Image 1: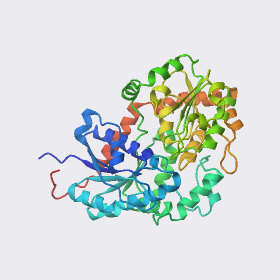
Image 2 (image 1 turned 90 degrees about the vertical axis):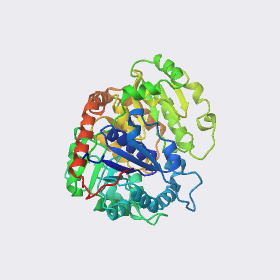
Image 3 (image 1 turned 180 degrees about the horizontal axis):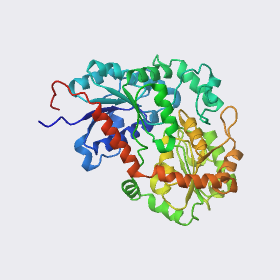
Image 4 (image 1 turned 45 degrees about the vertical axis):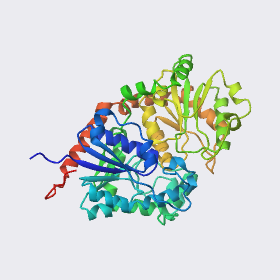
Length: 461
């Protein structure tokens, strides 16, 4: 009698910085013959990239309507739809999905639930149905224990056994302390969610690899006292994604401009889809780009919830003064195709993990300006690894145009940045090695099957 196909239920936090890595992992696992039930809200499911034809039979997209919560704007089903201060209402609404999840578990009999730390209540529900649960971290992992005041987050802890630069700036430390120890509108703090997740899950899967940060992965295994399994970096597959993106309507115009630029002369500037950069920061960044005197390609996102014309956001005359050496694009662009162009020589980024993986996959040195959440740790890790330089900040976390300009020139042009450029090019071998990261997926699949609990009877799907 043939064994039942392995079934995983996946439920990421309602942020595309989490949803998309979960979806990428879902596709990799589906390609190995595992059936995936991928859960999110209707609008988020509709905004997912299309499933490749050869994987359709192994991925089922499951929509569960988001519960209504006072304070959460209508049609806001992901953090991208919200200002940062409203995210706590989304967490509260997400907590209201526990009954819907229980109903799904009555209909689907998965071998495993992979979940995100916000849904810290999933392990208890899974246990009721005798289903194992694993926490998938789509970004950097850390341990929050033994840190009892804000300044503890601004330095490498005394108990940390490794020589490391990985810590947060003073302004980031204050935010982290507040998020961890003070409950929000959902009645839970980030620390409470993290503790419940780590206590309840049977293992932790992380989007990383030993070749990049083996020493940290080993440390986390010791701290967590449960299996920590790498799934690789899940890098984009260029032969599919670049060719698809290069057919977009605006690529022809962009590629013609890039073709005119000198090799490795252009700075790619982008701050992701999650961070809503306020107008005053956009203007200060613009002045920094202008002062650098370097060619740049800037993906400019409109501040969330606000209506602006680009001429209102940017300094007077900025587009005219920089027109011969810059391109500013508003909205979606074929990012992978741009990063893969020979004219790109470095990236000025927010230090989001997915963006880092994409850009280092092409060997680009990083000019780092972390803005929220785990981005500060990501930036410090890249500085420690010798592939990035973090733009200096003021004590309150603000930045100055001169610091932006000097950082760009250091990384892109000056002798002081030569080591960064060489190391980033060398690190490309790790980030772009599809075979390496596929081996991590194979090992993860073996790990899952080795822990499979075969029930006394099975239900047909």
